[in-house]
Length: 286
Image 1 (tube, rainbow, N blue to C red):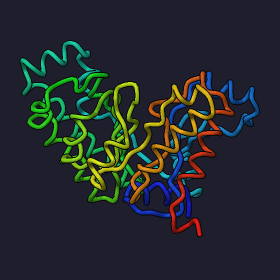
Image 2: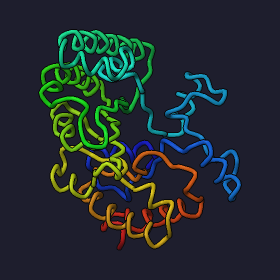
Image 3: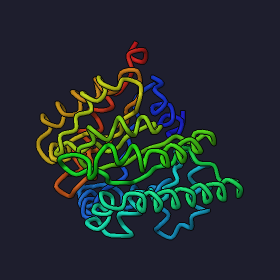
């Protein structure tokens, strides 16, 4: 089984040999520290997400496809685009006072997204998932009301997600902050997976797993603060979450945001080793 097949199966709630392990964000200082502590300089490379480092996008795509790596496409998300376009404060004000205008921005941008996806498809590119990054929450909850999301954002999310599903793509949604109120709305819109579940904001994958079962998959929630502490704490953090989150599939190991330079290579490897131990499924332990 390739790494791409394993990730796709996990998001589809299939119990395979073990849970996948990924990390999409290491600080530059973290990579430097890991290299100083023994990691080979050419070890860190993410062709399925980044196209930098001298790789042209087409070459990146072909290389990762040949290696069986999980390929994602990462367009801007419509609501996040509105926040970038107008600035956070003005956009949030307009959401309350001129909500139809904000919806028009989201609707127009969503249409453009679908047109670009169709263009890629017409050129023969096939992606395993769309991965949208949109920080619609902060540490205490959503930036705007659930009603605004349902009335002004959800119809356009549903349209985009339905297109992706019809073309064989899973939907992964990145949202920082406390996602407790947003998550059921995203599930209703059609996401397959939520990431990264920041611990500092109050997210707990064990609670969400029990509440949502196989309605959504999870990536993350391994506390980066704990990864910077001691091995016993890392062991308990990983074990307690992996054992619950992996049940019936639907979980991928990942930190709860990105890995800062306070985390040593030895500590990160401890987390990986603990995940390897507790992330296997029972039918593989005979």
